[in-house]
Length: 299
Image (cartoon, rainbow, N blue to C red; front, side):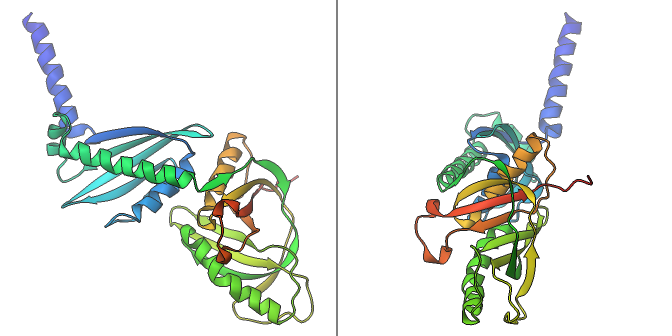
């Protein structure tokens, strides 16, 4: 009997040591989200910027990243882990830790509904409402294999954060259009973006914003404008409807599809815009064709 009691006491002590000193989080929250991991990651970034004080979200992958939440005099670390269940459902697990007050928080969590628990739940309920509201504002239609277009074009090079892509487009839409119009350059299709580098780790996007044009010998010279030819490529294609600020949600859908079907792709999306954002209107009526080029084989 004494031996059994000793084992029970030992197991209890080991459990308490693990819980108080080795357990990586102070509190854990899990919930389901009706979207894919990439959209959740981008939504966390957007929600993070709405907070009174914030630090950039630290990216590891679209399924694992960390966020610092400033709560009164404390800094809480939110470790996000996202598991895709299927195309329209992901499981989200957030491990929360206050590195300066971790021991006290673990002791407090023993008692139901303490302030640390309530504050954590309240923030993540707020995020979930933010996410669900965002999901109503865009639509991604089916994915198919297609070919990109070939065209001669006039381009402006831009480098921004991904969420600033639309601002770059809107700033250069009238600039590029007016120069081409004033010099009688004939347009040959809707404007498009050609992504040159999408660096998720650095949260940076390099891209050309271009107008397809008819090539001529008297094209206007301007230090911000370059002329080039875009060549046709095999690609995955989808249709995105929504604000151009968040059109990268379609990029994640295409990348997920490529990964699930073992299709090698270049992570350099091409977007063709059929609406001028400066004209306003119902954003769900804005149409964007989105392509992810396939990697070329040596055959």
